[in-house]
Length: 285
Image 1 (spheres, rainbow, N blue to C red):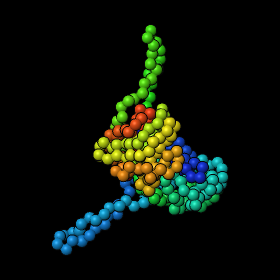
Image 2: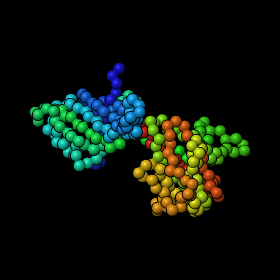
Image 3: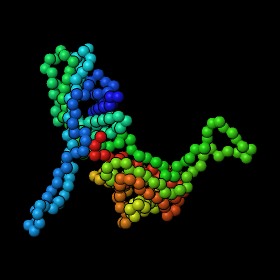
Image 4: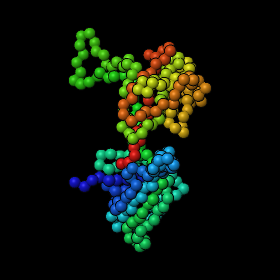
């Protein structure tokens, strides 16, 4: 059975599909596996060899070549490809191999037609540079730790004393699993759905740290914080609220494997809905 391999590129509101399920066959591709690593060494005059000082993953370069199966509208396809591969526009590439799909942000390095016959179905080569070498899941993990569990199903039988259609989970703890290759930051939303909440906090029980905001939320307020490196923030209803962070707080992330999270509040924890969200990242696909 032939392996399914396809690429979906999205840039400036346009999309282009290559490989399985399209008119374009991918003849060559490279750079989709583990990225290149730069290793810094320091010589030791008393020992053979050297000491590893630092390791750093370099930006990823992706390259692929394609040719078109359809002989119709070759010139139109050529012009559409030129307009799509605009080096001034950034994009996101989603690669699918078998049943696995992952995405990565890119900048265009080069786009070249490999067949100079403009009347022939276009064939071309593309080279992309990805500032972050990590592939991401196409969908982020998100769960309401204090969610509603439905009990309504068919066939429906209502007993004489009534039927509960749902119930609220009162457990304050949840185990989240990061299947990726490295620790990733969190986006967390505290929503005061049923009344006021004072000093909401999220604990990372697995690592012994927490993130706490010393503030009182009124019913309907939304407090969010982000621990993604380079994007750290705290906002109350969309307004900067970083001054309310508890001094002992840590902008913790989610390590690969299982992490036990727990939410709490000084007052009104039963009024909270809590949504921890993160996107796993991988070395390759």
